[in-house]
Length: 549
Image (cartoon, rainbow, N blue to C red; front, side, top):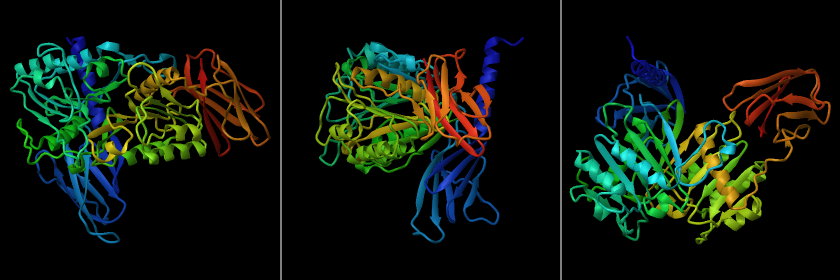
């Protein structure tokens, strides 16, 4: 007889297998990557010669050239969660220097992503899942992950404190070490890091350099059990939260994102060991690389739980350009909560996006005013009610950006991590960011944003009539259930197909109309949330959103 537990485990195994062997496509430097079960297809933009290696085993992988082509290749029999180094040279038309990119094959992990905040969130704008406010217990959540660690624990944290060697985070790390977990820890050499002296002397630690050519080791990530044989165990914890009392318990405003994925854990392990200088328990200061001395040697795209997650480390990976590229992808809305913006190229990208029609653009920054702050310029270019300063208790320490929360037909995504939007983060510091392409995770960060933006006096522009163009108008928006769609001219003729979808893509309303003159759409039986309206007239298709309160 099968137990419920065995049945659930069987279903999970099936889900992991389907996820692993389904096809996923990503774009990497110079090529398109198709993950096809245990095979990896690479289609380059131009003719190249390719070799590939497994980063962990150093073994050369079998690369098959598609017959008759010089730009299409297949790496076969790739294991799950493999980190692959691809080397290639152009055959003609470009320079012949060796090019390198890194790939990560999908793992058989669960892909579960959890997000935790240490301050209130506004769940009234929740679309799928309420965001989690742990308040003063965010440190307890971190401790619970440390307590569950099985074999290896790699920590890179800027600053930290703990009540004693037996309690708090230090107590959890010491307990993990006592039960046989192999612990390695990197911390910033220029901070007090009060937790470090409380650790067991047997735990190897490494302080970052303090030379003038280097900034700070500003990461706040933990890698749990990266190489465990059970792919459902490895975890990455990262985000904006330092481990001091004010940062993790408040009043500073922070978050952590926790991802169960072995491939991502192995990618973060590569970054850790580049700073550590070795793959062993003992750091090698002659080989360790920090800040501007690091190389771009990790994958940047992962398939996690069927969703794409991008990973970048600073300063080697050009993170600032990735922030700007993400801004440029927005189709409907951008919402930013970041401690500071001192990069003029980022502020220019935001201003340009707003001027070109993305009116739903909102920013909250902290009250700190470092040299080069772009706050006043952004206020002037956008709006004083849409670019606001947080003056509440503590530091608004986030570094996240929500993109297209209101447009499921686009690419809802959230950018998070330790990377401040500054030149120091881009050129000197050790930092990390993730871009998670997932509507659920994106909306959880949006719930946090709405709270912070409101606390700072910001005004979200949600009560205006929505226009898809000069002639098509929807009102009222938000609505209690009924709203109207009308065309100002006769351009919508010969029949119109109306459809309304919820955030999961389920069609909840459809209707054929011969004209658009105060056409009634009734969502009174549907739940509160965001809905997407599609208007089809011949070859013409219009999309926009409506909020039901």
